[in-house]
Length: 238
Image 1 (cartoon, one colour):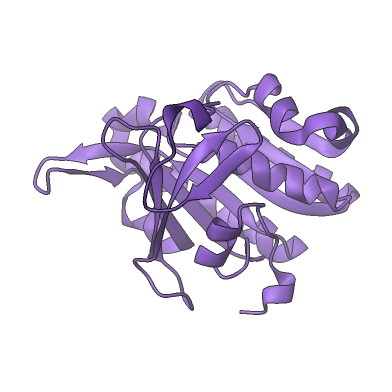
Image 2: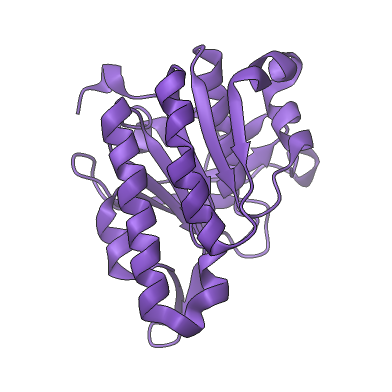
């Protein structure tokens, strides 16, 4: 992988885990339970791209936090927001429609990344029609991948999880199709009842799988920590 073509997210440990940053022309997936910093990482990636003077297409299915975006972006938040295109679909069908419609924005701007947080937030509300819903999800992912390839940019998605009773562990939603189309996959766990999270590389074409690092959520994003967690006074959860 050409490291010069990747986009650093802004946390050295996370960038190193995936080969220097987000790679263009592929889908990178983050999955984990709620409140594990998936949305924070998405915002960090968006802000990193905006700082390059490139446009961001951002789909949010779980109530986008303007306050958190401003906190991470700092004094540049208002300026950076000028090239930030936010879509908030109300249901799974609209999610697909907005993904397709956003292509016109990419064609008319200098795009840097497409982000979908979360790919399965609205999907899981329609699982009574599992096979049909899964096929629609796969079509959405194929369209996103096509956008990434057409404009030579990364696609970053987050994914929710369910409890796999056979393994007594949680697993990502979306079935094998979503796992297959995502070329880089990172699992994020909350360690016990602490404020520490752990990122584990589950899939990558050129990086050693199983690599990990621990981190905390801070006011400006995430920060890697050493094996000994910091005192509670040092933590900033946001």
